[in-house]
Image 1: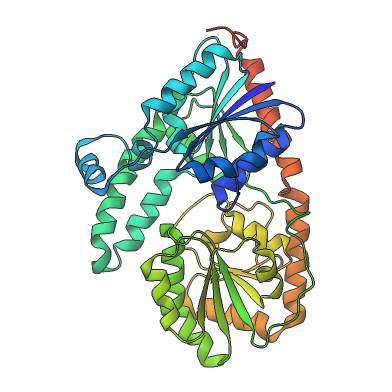
Image 2: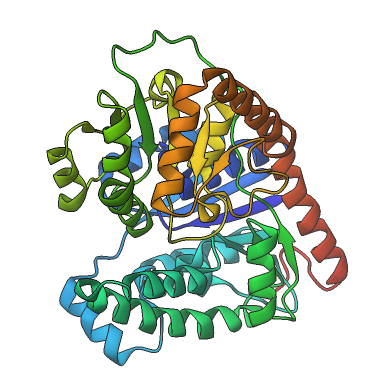
Length: 410
């Protein structure tokens, strides 16, 4: 098949969750299909980094649109479209897409994430139009709104999330007009999207992990043990998780484990994240070329998420690395087959979270059992080698249900 993926950012190097998903799709699809990638790119250096993918697929980049804060504030009031959709609006990319569609008889055109959903083109004849939903986006804004309402200082953010929640809900309900089918990363997300767009065919294609790369590595125990948190550090859900953990959980843990450290690894830390290092024992490493050694030497991995949705790649990576994972229910949401106390420890309030972390720090045999079970689960159900064929099977089923779909016909 000839496949075109529309990406909101360069998927290589694959550091973030969305980048990882798109990169793995390219990597595995290119083994049997002819793949094109049309992607936004912020600058020439990002273009150059895509050399790795040019050996696997056709790569076309368009400069990412710049949206200033005043322009976003005006759109918040004046536009019916969600902020995420406006961030992906570009006449240059639309023109490049039209040129590609005129030249290449694609079988499938897949929009990666809601930023690219506006370029979906459901037609009676032509390529299959597919939307890859990284999340049920309205749910994330709903959760963010309800979380921020608990603290008066964050009411302006709650108002922003309330507005985006309503706009996203309306926008996601209309996706069936643009696409022949959609992919959800979990059964929970699929159910939410199905309620909004009941006529849109849906298939579950979860996030995954390269279990050959993320695997147990030998590591010297550090002089003082540490907990690990990884993620993009300007992403609102990660910032909220870290601030809550540092404020509510960390003092309880330090009272019991005086030498314990919290190590934070990730790119683009905000001022609020950097300020956490003023607390005893909290260290910010920032962006690293290879996160695996940090996983390998950690005493446990923490995922104290309170906002978000979908399946979190970083949790899958921790499980694949055979780490003992302590997480909130929301952080583990969407990981089918995961059982609390067998694959990971679950806690949703500060005292319980601190107690669960202390449990794996005290009982290292239990930590190893959790790690082994977690890796077995990921290898069986969440390796990309098993996931990508499920996506292709969904395409083929939708194409069979739309007999007029033919490459090259407009």
